[in-house]
Length: 107
Image (cartoon, rainbow, N blue to C red; front, side):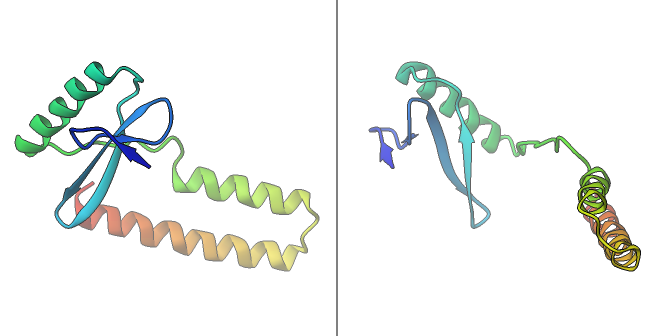
């Protein structure tokens, strides 16, 4: 992992921004291989953090969608019906727990 003089992480052809917020490390792709553009985007991220705005990551799939895809895969592998029932129950419990946790966090 390489860094330029301003601290932007250079792991490949594209620049990444690394920072620590509330005791947690964060990495954001800057989406460019141009150093000047990367520095400008890193400053924008610093300003966003200074304003107290968080980076909003939108999941591509919900947990329920992923669970259903997993069940379909297991069904196609020929799992027994009793096994599928157990998988379904465990995944339903996981989804309920996750939704309660998200609501408590206000997300």
